[in-house]
Image (cartoon, rainbow, N blue to C red; front, top):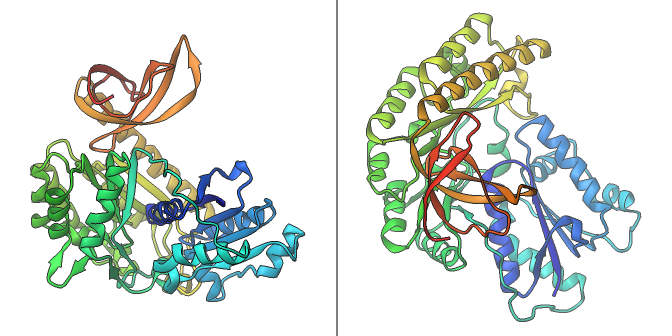
Length: 437
């Protein structure tokens, strides 16, 4: 039995890939451990969405190369972009950093190999230890929420994005395989399933589309909660969100807008306009009770003027997003945006980021005040370490992805949903009733 540790940077898709590989490794008799527990193998799934993500990925490669493991497996977008020539880190560089030239083995898994990643890692383990080490399967330790990859790649041409360069063209996982993987996760004790992909709404199988897949999952599994990770606005269609009459579907949509200015969206080559986006969000809110809508926003795109930025601030107010993931523009090699004129100065990007953040936080505070007294179903996930007056704080998420906290008896094990009343601005919830614990 070999002890394997996993780490990822970036999106939920990377997390889904790590989880799938971990389940495969436990089936082969290996043990999943933490990085701090001196693993034999470290699997690092990297991110290349921004320059900062690339820097963090390179730093982690060097850190993990020196951590003492005999096998280092590198995969993910940063590895693919490095293969294409962006700030590459060689295996020799990593081995020199580890000071174990003859001992450390490095395996890089690239885009085209990723569907076979578990087999590649298993083969590398066998070769590294000079024999098959598979024993009786070690029990996979389930979490509360399980990420299932249903799609990879992107056919769009957004001018700022390097992920499509790293991930390649769109391709979908077979529907039957998705349903079977979900059944497997549920049998292990997972309580919530999250569907994830680069272009989640682009999933297809023949003439079947994402709504058909969701229908299959609902009818063919006993999933308790089913959630979408992120979906582009052009994939929001009535036939999709009409499915949300089934209460097992979580009323939360993360749909990236990227800018609140049509002029900037045009420079980004986004496949949406603000009027269309706003209409779809209004439709969602009319048809799905208690739905929350979050988005991504890029601040300081080249050519973004003060007037365009004010349009974005007005748009944030008008839509009233429940949450916003804010990114300062980062030029990525190989993208059109990296060559555009009129870059925004770093200090201006910082100022605009702060403005958007302040605006977002005020909207969130207002929404929290309005929701005090509302009831929601919370799936508790994370247990705090500190104990105060015999109580330990847990955090979890409501169906609509509102994060809540509550203090429970320190020795209590939480493995289910609890109906809670929202108590105050700090997301502290007070228990009303409980079940399945």
